[in-house]
Amino acid sequence: MKKKVLVGFAQVLGLISLLFASTACLWIVYRPEIPAELKRA
Image (tube, rainbow, N blue to C red):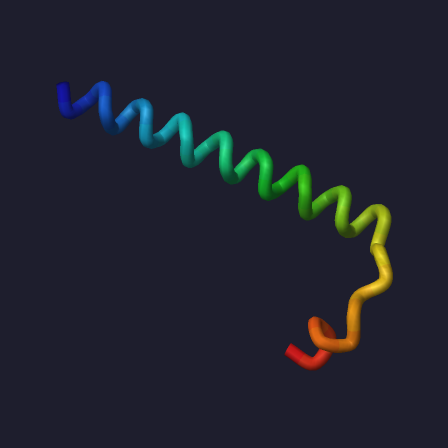
């Protein structure tokens, strides 16, 4: 039972990291204008 939970958790984490990576790639490619508030942070 514990292994099933761990496998599911790993899959969810993998999906999130994949989503994050693709979003970061799009961000680097398109480079939208960064608001001044974000630049200061």
